[in-house]
Length: 315
Image 1 (cartoon, rainbow, N blue to C red):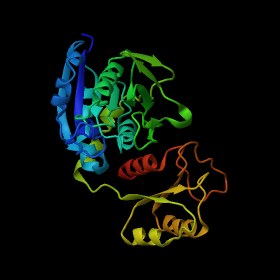
Image 2 (image 1 turned 90 degrees about the horizontal axis):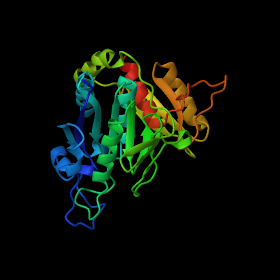
Image 3 (image 1 turned 180 degrees about the vertical axis):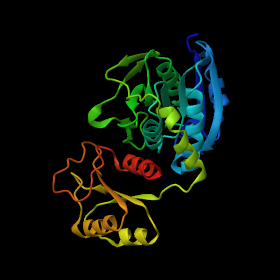
Image 4 (image 1 turned 30 degrees about the horizontal axis):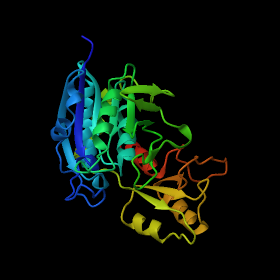
């Protein structure tokens, strides 16, 4: 039988937020409304096939943790393995959505769609954006041939490797930078512009060991630093003294570093700490040269480079 089920996993966020006043779009408490209650507000959602729900977590995404990621990855991999499941939708806060999306794509590279969606206004708002985003996310999860981890917000579909939150307030806060969006959802139909994130056969099964270790062992400590005028090496030395295992530095421009900060990072690297150089610019990527002493992030943003480095250290 052709798979029909869509699974919606709730993790909290603004989409599940409540405020005391319908006109208050920022003074709300996130992660208050259960995923079943979110669905109940959208009667049309279950009309085209079966929708299953599960509350995996209930957190403000600024507080996202590896414990929640481990639980989420376990449930996502469980449902991906079900032959009657066509795709998965995850409700999530906007603040760390890009990190969760990248984590799931890097870990699982799924051949079915895993669609993260969100809201910038709480469920109690006069005009909440969550219900439409959830409808659009389900439409993408049901799209024939959809695969990989994507984010859907304000009618735009972003790939996990490219999506970044670029605005603090507006209803379409995400960008895909130079790559551009995968497509647009228009009245429940996807207009696709470029290819889906790449799937890798067998990756979901192979990730079981990493998921188990995420849940049971200490996650490698990797911190993000930023280069800026007057940046020194003291913070590197302090983190080194605390036993940090990896450092991602958000360099200026093309990954450039203040000479004092660079000297401290090179010492840390020589002592066995993994160091990666990204850029604090929101667009473009670090272009390496043969003279580089610190490896670049291969186009990843600082926060995604951190996730990648943690997964590499776990492996």
